[in-house]
Length: 265
Length: 265
Image 1 (cartoon, helix red, strand yellow):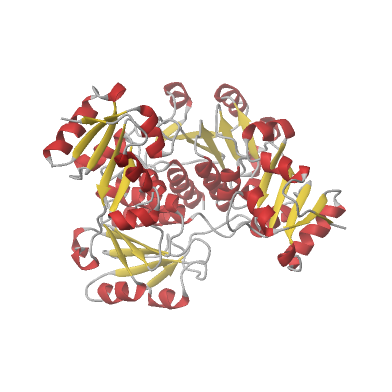
Image 2: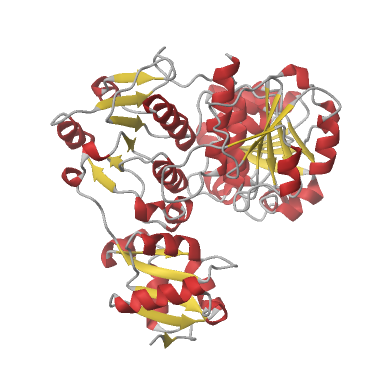
């Protein structure tokens, strides 16, 4: 039976609002996701919130009632609240119908089964949460086995990353590792490490790929460090015909991933 | 000779700060761009700011001195200021070394020369400024003739769009039109209108493209209206193997544009 909260001063509202900040996410081991589409995607992937906020005017929507029922069945708490409080929690003028507090999760590198997929995405020191979410969405679309984030990458539980992922955060396994640990793990089995680079003449469409492929994208501003580039089995570049010297990192990752997908048939 | 402004209360500082809001941009016919890379890209494209703010600690940088000199030569004003004021103007804790106030510009549809490029990008009711900036960057990278924005699309002079474009805003011609006017203009000459859609079985790689190609991407949430889809010469889809049903709009545009580029050789 959902409890009802209508006061902004309610401690649970205050505590949930704090999860918009990285420091509080780390302390609580929890993060926020919002919107019926994303929470339904999460539910279908078997992830239910510890706390589910929903507004009265949407309470009869079948996707909302399904979320409420399954959250309570799984031992979570459903909270009936106002649009104004949802707006405060989500930081948006027009909040979604639902907002969930989820336990953070991460897949240890050695739990990834590289034989489970032909393509894996790897990003190094990714800075922009929108890029991270977009890359997760691409990972889902190309059927990648997962995303491996190297070194000091942006927090993938940030509100912006979760939003940009459109739910792919819940469906695509994510691992975090130092570049060094990743390379050690990679070489314990088969795997072609393919790096996107501006410092090569190898066109990405002329290259030949062999599964499992690990597609590596470097930092948005600097690209990848030389040592990591040298560790790649193959460096490829996407041609640029314009005046600027690079594509957006999430865009470049997707163009590459779809070329690999097409080659592998 | 640059004038110096160190007071937050200075009217020019206040007035410039207001350009972060769409209403004030419309009134003034001006917009903001920031950062040495973007302003240099603009300068190389022949666009100089009406007002250039730069901070003292970077004043000796050769790209800053070039911007100051050319801004003044073109009749603009260069303003030496503090990092704190640049931070206030840009809304970022770590502002770039320079920030420029530019006159808004737009290319009328009938000034576009369709024979000048093999690929043109068209976006319909685009909502997200980050997507817009990213699509401009892709337009630059694939050598597109320009970007045509249909109906009620996001303001491409917003701070977020300018930033995401990484300077491509200054190098890629942008036209705005209603879908109806665009279709009339399109059919006055050669041009294959290719729409990205989820409602077709035509794979984007199996399709055959003929220049000049107008690649049409619909609204992020809804795709394009049926009438516009029917007006396309060809509808194509990008395969999705995951649980979500769509790619980010800027990503899908880029994957398509690079396929077309490869086919045209």
